[in-house]
Length: 187
Image (cartoon, rainbow, N blue to C red; front, side, top):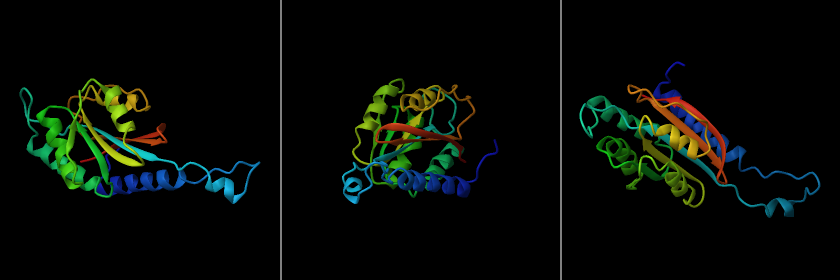
């Protein structure tokens, strides 16, 4: 699949957000009860979008920092998510994950939350506990991105390649139930 440029990716994310918020918030009409009173009494629909990425490009070494390319990618992520008000940014306790997620958190005036990289169920539960509709960013690793996506109800994925830093998965949930996963690339 061809890589998307930043403008195309922003359009896709905006489209997903609009579709999720409009399409999923429309009340369903039961053919047996079509009165306005019945429509007004339906429960509101909470739509969540969880962005799951691998940390950005790194230098070599044990617990490496982001490389110059990785720092640019982390800043590009801020631009890509600029129209989302993030409720939470989850990062692992590694320099590369923290350095990838912190710019997006700061842009929305929040702090990062550390999670255990192999506790995908725990991070999914933390996301589920965020009240109302929300947008969340999870910064994972090549071998834990698939675990997080699956814990959120998404498809089973292979581990990412060691050189693959440009994947972005947008998982859409409605009232806590899985709806769809978008698999995207970003620079």
